[in-house]
Amino acid sequence: MRRRLLLQTASVASVLALAGCGFRLRGTVRFPYSSVHLASNSPIAEELRGALRANGLQVLGGDVPPERAEVVLSLTGEQRARVIVSRTSSGQIRELQLRLSVRVAARSSRGADLLVDTELMQQRDISYNESAALAKEAEEEVLYREMQSELVQQIMRRLATLRPA
Image (cartoon, rainbow, N blue to C red):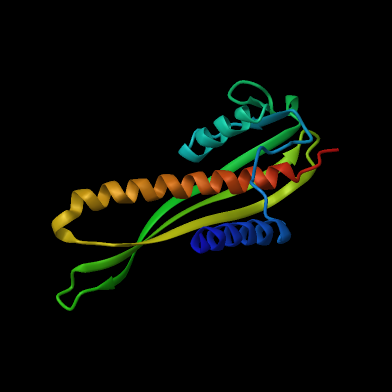
């Protein structure tokens, strides 16, 4: 009986602490515009295109002139890097750092800069073992996909703050 009361008290206290600090779930993003032009075909651009459509925006690209959209978004310089962080005494790789970066810029259809050219970057550390090289490659791909999704979420949050004239 006493244990149950203690658990209930702890759960109520944790809910109150989260409510008091302003915590809330991310939810959907609201955009003050209805169309975006995105011409890039990189993996990040493809995921971003899907996320924008899921939030109700019309995503233009390809043959459509950029002036037909309220916001023109450009993604450039997408780079993946694999940096050796440490080696064993025999020279074998022990730890790697995976990096994914992209440059983002946005302007209005009239040419006014809404988001100046900004580089966004994600990085993850990963241990490495030569005897499990195939498994480590699969783990790297999973980490790159996670970093890509996080970059898309960062771009979405930045796009939600834009106010085209």
